[in-house]
Structures are given as C-alpha cells and as structure tokens.
Length: 243
Image 1 (cartoon, one colour):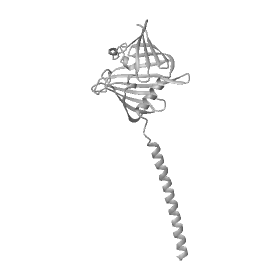
Image 2: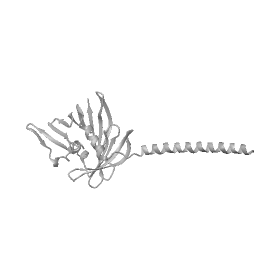
Image 3: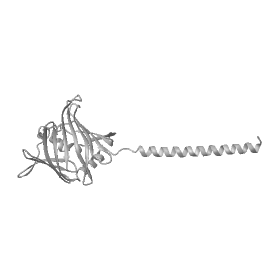
Image 4: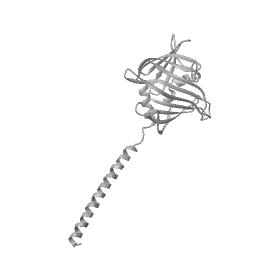
C-alpha cells in the first residue's frame, strides 16, 4: 500500500471511529437522561394522602347502598355534599354524619336535636352484625401523621402507590394500616389493617367500579375479617353501591 493510500485508510478509520464514539456517547446520554427521568423519587406519603383526602371531599353524590354478609343485608342511603357525608340506616333508624376536615375527620350521630360526636369507645363496634366497624367508615387512618411510601404495586391491573400508616394511639383497632392508592385516580384500591400484635386482622379490596353520570364510583368492595396470625377468613362482608 502506498503512503497516500495508507493515510486515506487511516483517515477513513479515524472518521468511522469518531462516528462510533459520537453515536455511543449520544446513546449513553439518552439512556442516562431516561434513567434520570424514571428514577425521580415518588411523591411523599403526606402529599399522596392529601390528594386522596381532597378527592374524597369534593364528591357530590346521592346513592343507595347495602352491607351484605351471608344472609344479612343492611340497606343504607349515602349522601355526600363535598366534605359532608351522611349514612342513613333503617330498622332501627340511625343517621351518621362524617365530616372530612383538613387535619382530621369527625363522625357524628344525627339526632332529633342536632348532632352529637360519636363516642370514641363505640368506634370499634361492628355495624349491625357485619365485619365493618364505625371506625372503618370514619377514614381516620387518612389523617395519621406517621406514614411512608413502601413502593409501587398493581391491584387489579391498576398501578398503585403502596403506603404504610402507623396509628398515633391505641384508640384505633389497628396498630398500622397498609394502603394501595391508584396513581391515576387517587382511589383507595386495597387496605390491610393490622392489630396491636402486628397480625393482619382485616382486608378491604375494591372488586368493581361503575360509571354514573360520567364519573367513576365504587360498585362493590369486599371486606374480610381474618383470624390473626393466619390467612383464615372468619367473616366476609360486601359493601355495595347502587344507582
């Protein structure tokens, strides 16, 4: 090979090598940018819970529902006007009013003379023989100050944030709660409540949803009471919402 030919070959090799290096650098830069984008930290548990509370407190609904366990059916009417939610039961009549505040929720008993705060000692009581307690209706756990994001998981094909919340005192039936919150809608998809021996005691899970007047609402939720320390279901209640 002549000297000129060698110089041309070397020059061509250098040009190709330069292109390869530049292309590789471009690919690496794009990859690092993508990794940086997807490695962004998740929102804080505080921000996620604030979004859930905001979503819950903005609904306007008037629907019929029922709690169903085996042969027991407990009908109720659910009326929500923003942060004020009323559950009306019959036989015997009982009206509960839940107020969702910025920093706490309050469950009241509606009487002929107005409202009176629901006694804390009664919050752990079950509603008419079902495994749902008055505390479960009060959303108290959404305001617990000690919470953290555990990661992400899918629940019924929905991509969810998984959170752990710790009870601030022994007034609750639960020592801590795990929540799965739909990333897209902010809806509660699953909840697990653990007793004060850190044993799974109750599990809530959305089974189906329905569209009413262009908006998505709960259709059926399954609530299971478990024998602590095992996965044995002691009782199963369905909370069902109808148009």
